[in-house]
Image 1: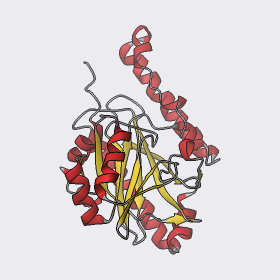
Image 2: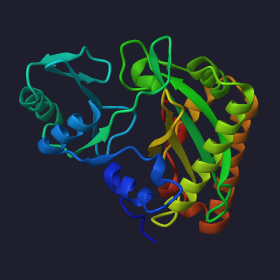
Image 3: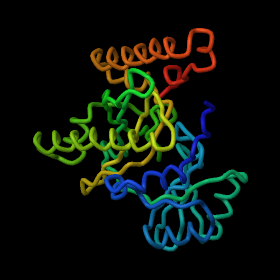
Image 4: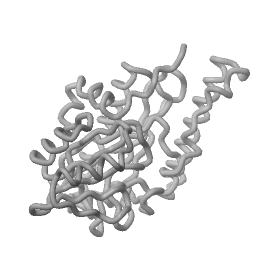
Length: 273
């Protein structure tokens, strides 16, 4: 059976909104248009403008008000200051170059050393159609001067989620354990709900926690980076991810035969985090 096309960020947001457990964790999102950007800025004060089909943090712009001015900062570039929303929109449209984008509610994520942090949670299967299994999670700290947490693009780093929550929010061990349990549950709910559109072999969810402790499902990655998870330096986690990958690969070979495998190879292990 032919694979369906990737949904893109807006349609995926709409898909996840159908699930009552996921809906409260989704930041407000709309297809980009100048009037929607104005409305989101008025409502939230800070927003993100993202490529609808992009990945690895490329092309993302942070837009926010500072007094009467509007500032736009693209990925790791220096922020540009504009005297009006209209001038900022002209710049954003120039950066978009006609490509479809979304506008998304800005989140005041927890910070470590002044840099935003989010969490990559990874779920995998060991065979086509098999149950989703939680594999692990890491906290991603953005690099210096970056509005994105993608480690490869921003020059950031990863740490254990427990350390990120302790340093970013000052939480107790008990509250940290409860949060991690919730992150695991949400990732499996989201992975299973994603099956209503199309099944995958593994998914990485980027989940943010704001400075009030609220959990936000920001994005999903259907080709999640194995090297990103390995950066944590946890051999048990790395072995688990690779073992589940290999189990799925062997099951796929049994199902489809080695002659059909070349076109079914996944790219995730070759991608940087």
